[in-house]
Length: 288
Image (cartoon, rainbow, N blue to C red; front, side, top):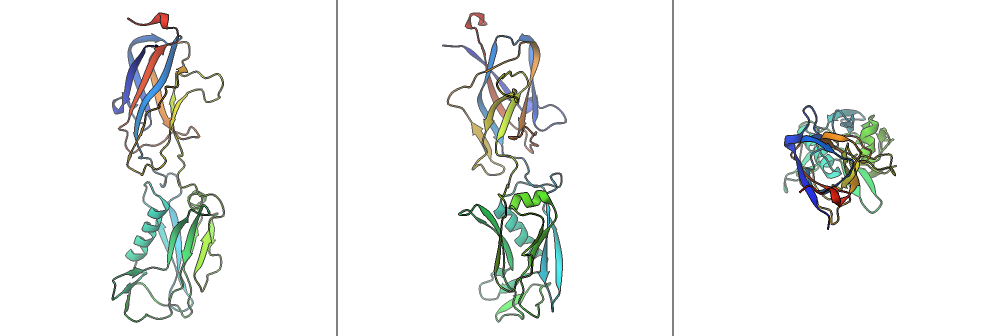
């Protein structure tokens, strides 16, 4: 049975000025020529934003019918954060209510808006659904302060020019529907929606040596699937995957968290715990 030695990397090892890079310093120079390292456990908070000003994917507009044959354009900026499509729809609803474009059912208190984002999992698409507005105030309803009624029943439209926002909902930049409808209309994704650019958290270690892969620094990958934003991702492999290390003397090793394309992840919460195990490849060199 092989003997291994644990080291623990936490927020205390964070490299100043970064949110994804951690340095573990040894008490003296260590010869890595006969060492393997494997990941024993990783705990990382799902705290990276998928929508932000920096990603240029945070803006869209709603073209909303108003009196007569006219429209008004409502421009929305999504606050930086972690969003699912349901969250985007909640944001859209909140903004329309805040801006006064709604009806209130006087009997039930329901607030009615005339467009929404929906997920259709059966066809793997995001849908933008628009509903025709009435041409006058319905009985037993109260109009929001900004809502006026078109001369003919028309629906709102979605408009945006950010390619990156379109990637999230699976639409190319443009106006949807292209022609303003007069009946309930569903516009569906024309490409696969990519709600988050992080499908896997790849853990890299700068001392690793893998001669069979161009990305030789990879030591493990953690999936955030089904873990909601702000919740803890915890992974403990059933079997350690031992990775050989480069032959050199080192006083420190650097661990970095990236996405599946090896682009660094900007963590909002750097409270991580990563436990690595170190072993001698040749067990005759055990430290006693």
